[in-house]
Amino acid sequence: MPYEKLEYRIYGDSRKEYRNTEGLLHRPNGPAVIYSNGRKAYWLNDRPYTEQDWTAKTQRKEMTITEIEAALGHGVKVVK
Image (cartoon, rainbow, N blue to C red; front, top):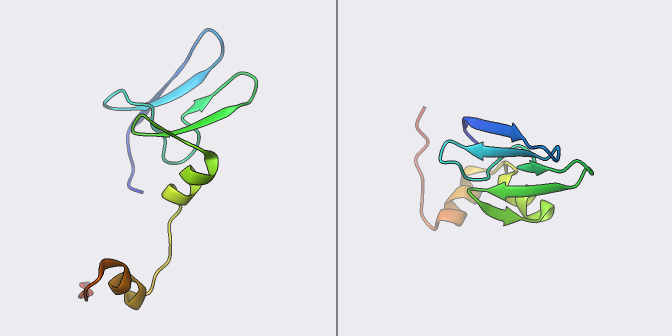
């Protein structure tokens, strides 16, 4: 994922929250909320995800040109 500017804040209960520039709970490279007890919550653009769903959504996938064409449903041209 491209670099995104994120800000975080630590609250009085030691909870740490990451938000994007629009102020939405968001963190594409880790949990957006980390609680003092160690529990973690995963969010993208203010939408909650289970850790498993977050991982599937944010994990980069290596694909061949043939696989990309199949996923898109049409041919692609490689430009360098």
